[in-house]
Image 1 (cartoon, rainbow, N blue to C red):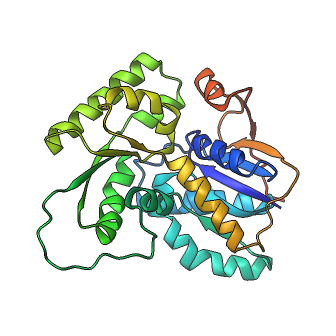
Image 2 (cartoon, rainbow, N blue to C red; image 1 turned 30 degrees about the horizontal axis):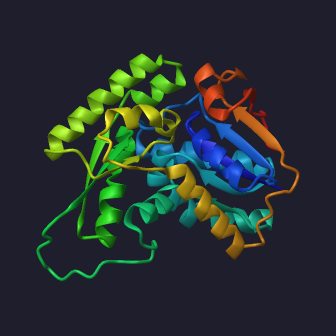
Length: 288
């Protein structure tokens, strides 16, 4: 058994690296659906179908848990899969299975409150709002998941999302740091114009963006801290596994990197981020 990590592309490596650091003895399968990436601009039903197919492949390869290291898939597909698909698959395979997302732990980190908490609606005027900026794909921004879920828990927080249509693709295709920096600076400036000032905090709401978090750090004012998804997800998953010891994730420290796209060595940007050689193998044509 193993722990599966899925993203449409290579951005999920940011979450994967944090999970490996937190659970070094676990066996991991990382799968990126580069043949269909990016998911951010796809219709919702396509995102659901592609995410389900990827999870099915990972379960077939021996995963007992799959982490959707993709904000778009987590925002659009996760609930549907948990409610309408997983119960039947568990009965069919006769073993514990689950799919977890990355938005819940991110919102818990952003609000400082557990997911179950809901704010009391007293109708009182909030004197000072804490403003959170979210940089994300168009799909995540259109879902308004961060606005909706943070508002449920904190009435003193306002959320502004800035969709970045090209940024994930630029990271996937190995754009230069100068090109990436210029793109990020444009989106930070656009968000600041809409808010009227710099955000008090910022969420990198696409796992690709964590790979170049230093460029966001340079573009944002020094007093605007970043809320880092990978560490929040790693903490949340470790706590989940403590509560659910029936999920077997292996003990051999295995590492498998699969892609539905072109196999081969990762880009220099990704290998520098990962901290060593990184090669993607073709995903098996049939899960076994």
